[in-house]
Image (cartoon, rainbow, N blue to C red):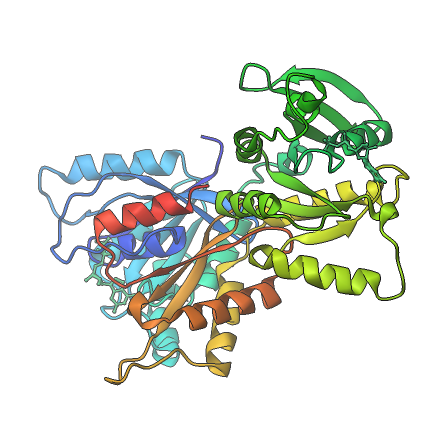
Length: 453
Ligand code: GDP
Ligand code: GDP
């Protein structure tokens, strides 16, 4: 396992699993009220700021009970701890320190792993500090008042936690970027491809792609590698057996599927056609980053209004991907061609970017205070409890709300707009999932599937 592991310890019923779900963020909290329910020891992926880690719930730890299970449970906790980079001991702030808490803390102090103390069930900020203060006696340093149910305090806890985790990987920056160049025949795809090949320094020989005749070409610029997906498809129409009108949309769809970022090439003379819209729609559905490349700009007669008017018309035809940057180039003269790869780099960075939960919630709070969620005629109002980013490529967010049905399309668009304005993500589609408080398993699974792109 390459990611650092964080073990969550504590006696039963202090709220460990609630907290794990909160930290992992990807699922709605699943809480069982009966004590002693068996749970699997599962690793849940979590992240905070730019750090990723795994959270493991060790199950209830009991020291002062001499049942026959005692050694077993202790063994489980030891096993979890032996592979952990840090531990969080969870205690119950409403109940105060108990004998079991003291025993676990005592034991934990002698383990070679940094341990933090989370005082759970501290919903009230003022009370919370007082409740937390009682736990200094455990000797594990500063007690953090948190609420697994509502989320308060978890930001401070996580800030401290990630400081204890080892650096994991810096590979992200030099990972190769898969670029698909798509567009109708004759828009200038091969000309652009040639321009890239001329512009980039070293060219690695063609590599076969996943399907039989799909040839990828890898080029490098500085440290960055770009895999140009299915270059054979781009050149195909040069072969005589295809008429000039032949256009394999399925081949384009496959290339989009295999890419990180799509260069959607449009012919400046023709403007956006129905086929271009179809390709754009697929890019958005597949969750790929995209740059709209308007080629043959040299051939358009210009006056001072041209680019402004032109861009507005083009934007309105591609209104469903208003997040994509548009660039006006000429593969023939080379005008602005080098800038395309700069935009590719930016779009890919946004596509992979993660935003911390606290920032997401600041944006949500601000948005809701300007414009509160709708109320039904019966007086029921939508409430957003909190939001968190659940995945990247493309960035996806889950908003936990009282009832998704209370949020109209209008309001959803408003929130999406606020996300865009405040969080950026230029160049990539984003997804927002509205999740009710009690999500049934089946529904949850389908949501989880939908977020995987
Ligand atoms: P675990 O046995 O330690 O994993 O505890 P659970 O996560 O199953 O939670 C035990 C009980 O505590 C449940 O009834 C939860 O609803 C409740 N609980 C968990 N977190 C909080 C919290 O932050 N505040 C309050 N008031 N109750 C909580
Ligand atoms: P593909 O079918 O999309 O690969 O398009 P090609 O690269 O084969 O280009 C089709 C035609 O458009 C060729 O005759 C090119 O010379 C021409 N063309 C490509 N790029 C430009 C450009 O930037 N300006 C002009 N005026 N013509 C271009």
